[in-house]
Image (cartoon, rainbow, N blue to C red; front, side, top):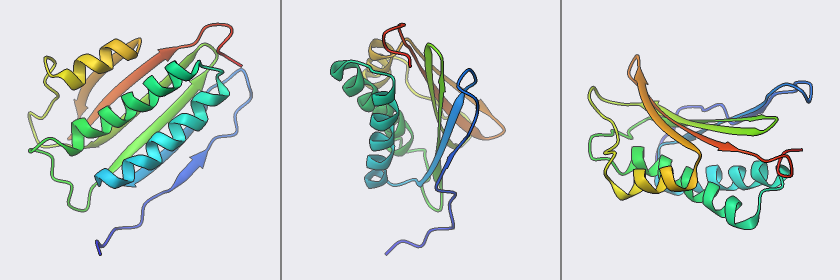
Length: 147
């Protein structure tokens, strides 16, 4: 059994409808825990009335984003966590996956995983600040999609 430090589970903000709704999820940096991120992504996306195809693409994208950390040989998952931030705004869904990374770690922009993110999301970006790598995924919602 793996020992884990105490993680902050799920926190849901209570902002007015015209403002962003933010949900934070922190999971142990373990591949089998990514199912929680996929599940939460599906629930959030379902509120936006995305098509089933778009909902599946979104879940696939967060799975891939988590995998870009967890499957990278340079990433040390020992006692690490992935922090997932979902921001729902009128017309926009922004998802950020972040974790501590070693210097110089970044996704290969020519890798099939990164190319897939670019194909199913409206925006996909990577940045590192203070030893934390962050993948940001953006899905624009049409007037029909947004609630």
